Length: 109
Ligand code: FES
Image 1 (cartoon, rainbow, N blue to C red):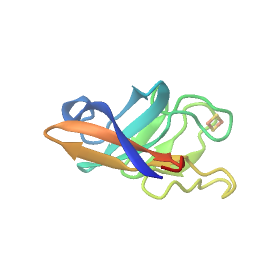
Image 2 (image 1 turned 180 degrees about the vertical axis):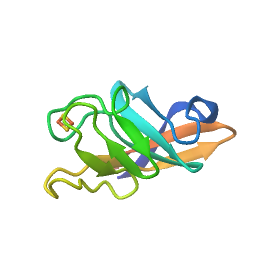
Image 3 (image 1 turned 60 degrees about the vertical axis):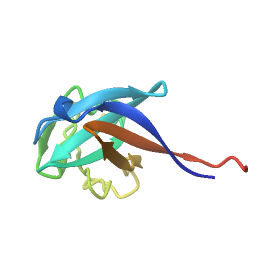
Image 4 (image 1 turned 120 degrees about the vertical axis):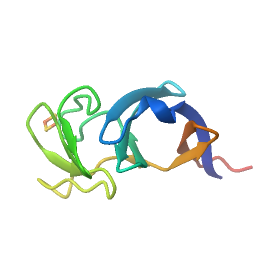
């Protein structure tokens, strides 16, 4: 039981102020670079599941979905339109230029 980290991309793939989509263990993840700090969430909007990496915009910590312009904070996961629609966030790790995303493993050992 605990976080398992999987390789997602290279640091250079996500420039400052940018966002990308990465497939991690077959799961679509959006990775955001806010002033050099990386954050990750599921690559689907909690509103109607449109990709967050492919459209919209990132301005500092604030992500705007391209579909209906809902706004989210990628650091906290908060949805600014409705608190009942937070981002599904994942922890991010880095080692030797590689970016890792953590998935919670709740299997008993
Ligand atoms: S699908 Fe993102 S705001 Fe509607």
